[in-house]
Length: 168
View 1 (spheres, rainbow, N blue to C red):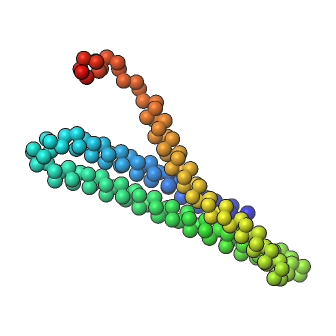
View 2: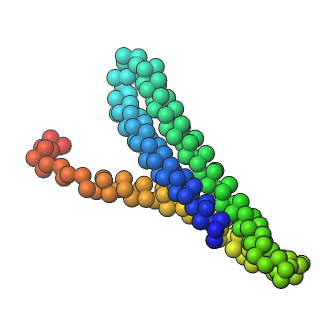
């Protein structure tokens, strides 16, 4: 438990970083998709005035910013995975050290105790290895829910803005 308690603040920092970079990445993705939609809707005008190069530069600039956020987010995700993959090893070592150091005269680490302990730690290994993926999915889901909430809470469009006669 001590190993987990020591490493938990680091996890919180990584989770916050993942959240921040996920939001930033989605904002850049929105800007890029909006620009591409604008380009596609006015492709005739862009071709007519030969503005392709200018728009390509704008799209590539947004894409490069988005890739920077994705890169940092993946590095943070990798750090979290490395941490959670190494936790079972650290917990096992800390448990053996604590077992022996608490009472060196009575607590002797023999093969029977070691193998039974390793089998129990192995049972805990799979849930601990899946935890960072679960946390990553929770962060992504939280960002998505926040974005959907903002969208659904937008003000309603004024009904007088668009008339049926204008559409037909």
